[in-house]
Length: 235
Image (tube, rainbow, N blue to C red; front, side, top):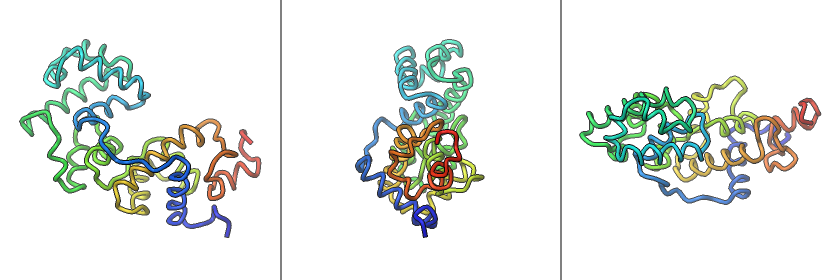
């Protein structure tokens, strides 16, 4: 049996191990406060990290705190976060999210999620406007070390090309499929997410994957079934 023909359950751990060797294991420590992570991740939709960060700090500088952001005039807040994509859609989502948190919790805090079971925490977050499965899982993994797996566009693309998920699997369904095959260990899930994201940015890019430099090409469906046979345009 060729490496790329291995079952997905075997390939996913090989993928994890190879990328750990390539990019080195990471520690899991929150990079920012819980509320910061939530709102910044909402800002990051369809937006690169640099522009997301600029929007967040401009917003906080202009309005001072979460109360100020929640009550800011629409046009003023849209202007403050104008470095993001679709700021007009994000303004009401962010402000309504802040209102819900303040009304339900009595303060601008989601610290309570630390003690909530995973499924309940996911359900609570995903009912907030503008918070989908990717945002919810990222916040729960990065900040609360919950055993969940965020699947962004890079994680999804690499997983599909390698053959960890099928060609017709949706991004939302990929969360469950990949998570079911991985240890329910937050550190493993964090490294898997971060390394596939980095690999998708550097090597397994959307337009021109650099297969010749990829440590996964021995187990990769795309490389063995498409690129190695000269079928794709990039070959």
